Image (tube, rainbow, N blue to C red; front, top):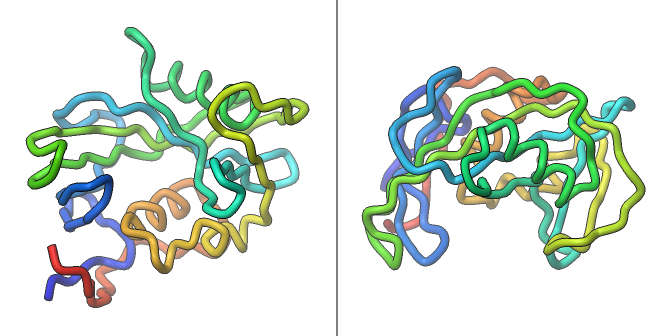
Length: 186
């Protein structure tokens, strides 16, 4: 059985089964993105009161707001537009946390190499008036964000933990070499 780090370390790869395929995923520190096609930006949106903004397509599964670039948008421009569209959140300050790189090794996207920028976004919330694909927004205490994201069972758990740590979300320890068995067969 493969072993997966509890928290992603720089450049360390791990296997994930998601989106009808098998992927090799890794974390890369800023400022230089790894090679691959830009797959957008994702933000840990933090309100002035320290709450974290989550979004959902179905009101049951919650995630950090994210999206793909339009045209020749920069990583940060994509972040700012997507946070406004998906979370009705205006980015006041953004800090690049790192990048994820996914290489599809099997499935419908075989051969794809996708890179996503991960950010901490200090935000001001606008009234909730969803206009796009995300109908639900929730504010959660920082200490409980991992529970709302269902990190324990999430295929990208090491990346999510690293993102929350880098964003300085309370309760998320430094990346470590601690291991847990990965019971998926990839």
